[in-house]
Amino acid sequence: MIFLKSPEEIEKMSTSGKLVAEILSEIRSRIKPGVTTRELDQLAARLSLKKKARPAFKGYHGYPFNLCVSVNEEVVHGFPSKRRLVDGDIVSLDFGVYLDGYYGDAALTQAVGDISPLAEKLIRVTREALFKGMEQVKAGRRLGDVSFAVQKFVEDNGFSVVRQFVGHGIGKALHEDPQVPNFGEAGRGILLKPGMVIAIEPMVNVGSSEVELLSDGWTAVTKDRSLSAHFEHTIAVTENGCRILTQADHWTTLF
Image 1 (cartoon, rainbow, N blue to C red):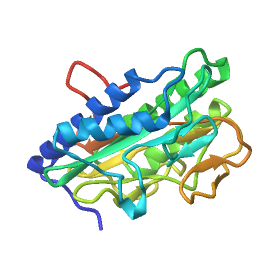
Image 2 (cartoon, one colour; image 1 turned 120 degrees about the horizontal axis):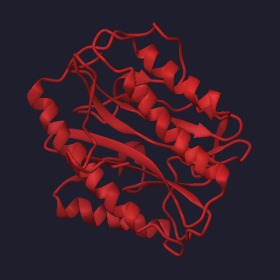
Image 3 (tube, rainbow, N blue to C red; image 1 turned 45 degrees about the vertical axis):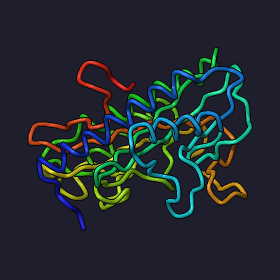
Image 4 (tube, rainbow, N blue to C red; image 1 turned 180 degrees about the vertical axis):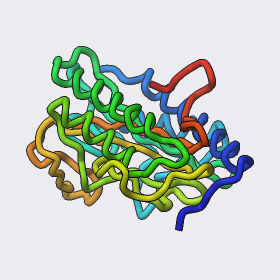
């Protein structure tokens, strides 16, 4: 069932979303060679506590950390660890909070030091694919319009979209209906209506779209071990487009 949010609920989700953006921005600023991914997770916990918010992922279906940190070939749900980031890595941060009854959720991929031209292109294309999808969001459009726009832009640039993990509705629950795939047909799928809140999150691989899970049961990696990137915004559908809820404020963008 898809739950349409009232204007008051969307304002609460905006508060959660802004906090997600602020914390992700702070974590991203600390990324440099030598930093461990566990240090990033601990920072996420401290910043959440300071704002009296609960990290959304910790404990969700047993996930043991506050932050998902996926490096290079890791697609999503990477475990923070003692691993130290090195020059040339790319690192994806996926983070959410639960605040005043509502969730916010966002993700970004950041370069560590100097990265290859291919990695730079991957990050740029994945970020732009998210905005291509968001450009399709408007009351009266179909969800397939969003999915198709993401897939076409990614594949036109020579990369592939992950199909095993998708975006989602969000609100009082972290994952609500509908699912938001990064592939599909234009003009198909559910009708977008004002009050819908969804998380659009392209996951893009340099090589094959296939992924597999590591032995920890959570970390998804590309099957061919090619690089992967991930961007995500929580957005609300409006009559005229979309409202990004996961922005730090009206003059500073998360990415």
